[in-house]
Image (tube, rainbow, N blue to C red; front, top):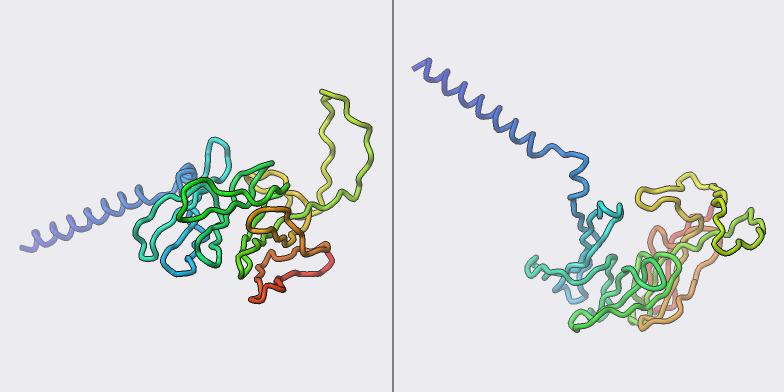
Length: 239
């Protein structure tokens, strides 16, 4: 009886060790697993509370960049489905449209608007030189606001002779004054300051509403209910 108990205990310990070993093999994270990961962000609840739209992101290991799609589901987690390519969604106040960003013309990310219940492509409402972010609707749904970097002008600008056609000149020197000047999958970052812009929701020319050599809205901003003001944070301290 005593030998049987010892054998049972020994077998249990062996099984635990095997299970632990298998668990380690399954849960060990390898560097290459990073390229197979998917991330969920920016969940936005519709104004009526019935639907949730969110961004699904992954790494394109062939082009070394992040790509994203918009997915939508019912508030109870059912009926989860692909909606369209893009990211950073924002519901319109009436819940009929969604503003978001994706690749557009003339280059880079642009702001688009899509009717949720209507077939057809989304409408591009901006034509920007830089990537917009933190999209928000005005309370009446007539305007869309966003934050975008305004590149700083080169303080050491020297007028150079015009480059001949098809000439292969050496790349111009880069002047770096910021501590953080490069990011993975982005390369060199543009020097400048974040500013708040607004654009008609139906499309048109974006208008910059903040100014100065400080970041505006990077820590968040909000429309007032009467739509007369936009409240934002800004650390206005000289470097």
